[in-house]
Length: 296
Length: 280
Image (cartoon, rainbow over all chains, first blue to last red; front, side, top):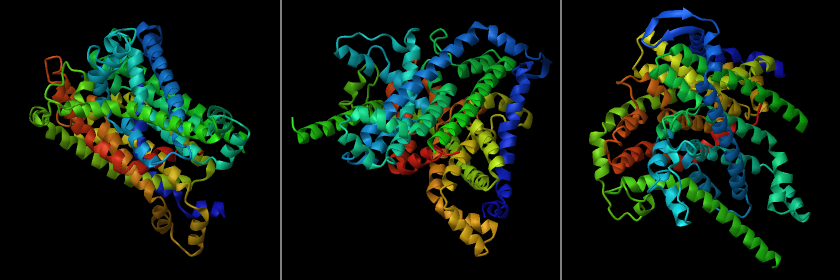
């Protein structure tokens, strides 16, 4: 029956328009990006292109600025992923408590950081949160007798501050997926854990986490990919500075392509980012399948 | 301490934890709003602004007039609404069709869609810049709209697949036995079941387009600039002494629609974001 259903429903007719659209506006530009990455080509001078093979890639790998951006992006992504997973899990666990009331209301308010325009998030945190003299963070620190640093203009703190802001923006995504996952866990399991004398954190670690492995994987991948490509927020907060301390790969590609007008190099950086993400997507599918088979 | 006290303490702890996160989540937007309604937002603690001593609506008046608000607003609105309509028309059938393909074909196509959903936006913005110059689309709303769709189509398709998978197979098989045509099977049997998914798709695509900045920076020229570019241009005046209050007012106006969505339609945002969570 399943096979006849497939044949009968004419799936391809429904897929085709979207597939053609994707080929035209996603795959074709990707191909152009790859082509550019093999050429020396400059902004506003697209008529002159020299084929250089993989030279741009070789240059990037020996370029300290590129290596620096790889490091910055890796730290930024890692901090975001860990922060969102831990905080998201804790908040979702608290919210899923049986006796907590107005769950939908809490969730609606928790969504705010996520729906807020990233550019506005950047502006808000820059002007009102991280601002060294009057900003909320340093005011609160000052209340405890600590004098906070010049967060966004200090090389040693700027990356931390931007990563934390981005994690603030992405955490709701982790909360809502984890919360949805937790509500599928039957009450009997919590009950059994309680009878066995497990406290809340033991319950979380030994009972809950193993049951929602697939969701943890999903949240990790979503947060990772979002943080990896982040541009808007970092760009409005620091513009990649001070120095190069927050120049994530997206900003480096922008600087190379628009500011330096070196489109060949910009596309090389961007296409490298794409390849990294393609590998991540492939790994995700693999791990997901293994995980699915293991849990069956 | 007896069991009852213990359990009350635990509940109190839970509420305390949730409240703490609520303060962290809401403080920045609340401070932004407070600054927007204050006469002198600069050189004052944002926490002091919450007392609303110098209440004023003047910042909004300045934002509307000096910030060229309606010009950017029209661009943002056009692109967001058009993106929603086209995404629904293209992605809903595509997601439906994907669930009806042979498993092998389906999983390789799904992988392609997933890989595109994770694309760094900058890898599309750079080549689209050149393509649009060649097509005469650079600096046009249509070009910017196409760029947005390159993100929305993989995202929305992936999400809708999650909804179509929940349509009961028995329902469709029964409809086929009754002689239902392929088109009616989609339109009258499956589509009504995924109705909440359509709402989720529309809201999320609108929010994504409304919030978009990177493509606009690369591709909008001067005629198609949306609000996100409008405010950063306005921000350029910060160093030149632009008032924080006016910037806050401008920013508040931009986030108002998405905040309203979050308050009134959070159910759909949640279901949309979790739709792709666990499937193959």
